[in-house]
Image (cartoon, rainbow, N blue to C red; front, side, top):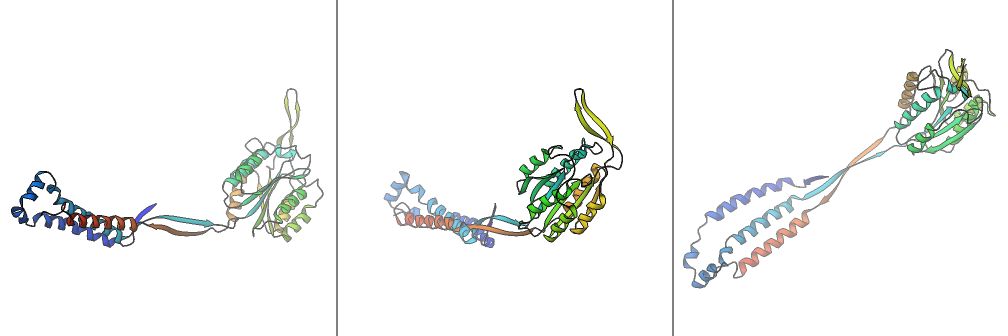
Length: 328
């Protein structure tokens, strides 16, 4: 909220008030010497002593209020409107058993994926984002939404073993493209993360990529996992979790072909820091310009000052016109 004046230079007239008051103090008042007995009697009873200062105070105050009215006092607020078309994004996350390999932090590959995806969501604005999980089959966890709180909760709830054993990359991509098919946004994106080869599902991954490209969907693919042997949980026993050492083979060529077909990009994440950099890069690439419009909304307040000044001016005239304001 700001306070200002339409014509602030009019406030210079207020400088005349001190000069006028000084002149009023210096002017001669010889009428008192020839005042009749009635005036002296009223002055003795306390009525006449107000006759001098009250009209002058009323006139000075009314003049100040009228000057303020001429200056045009106003209050206003700066309003900033931001509009952005936004992007429709579907995050497709592999939740197969191999995503529990402990070569990424925190804990494992799935933990790193969940942490990085949550951070990515927090940095987005105006976009509708959906979440698809896939393993042996694909399932939409959250349709396209701007409710990032619900989306973050769904990401935190991703678990391995809920969608069977295996990796159906084609089904995951097809489910993601289906969510984007009717999206109104001009820019449609899928970010697909996997650490293995497509060995399950009903949809061929390359055919799914061609269908996505026909719909104008760009696919960013991320191959996860280190090139070394990693510890993977294989069973839960009475004494705890049993682990096995395994090396996951990721089909990098397939993921690169999907990205190339859809005019997206292929990335390789061998550690958690690399995964974060990849999502930062995607975050920079997929941005829409924000159109900003700034304007001021003002409200004029001259009328209250004008009315108050007019009322005081009339009061001053009435005071002088009655016996209260003149010495008979």
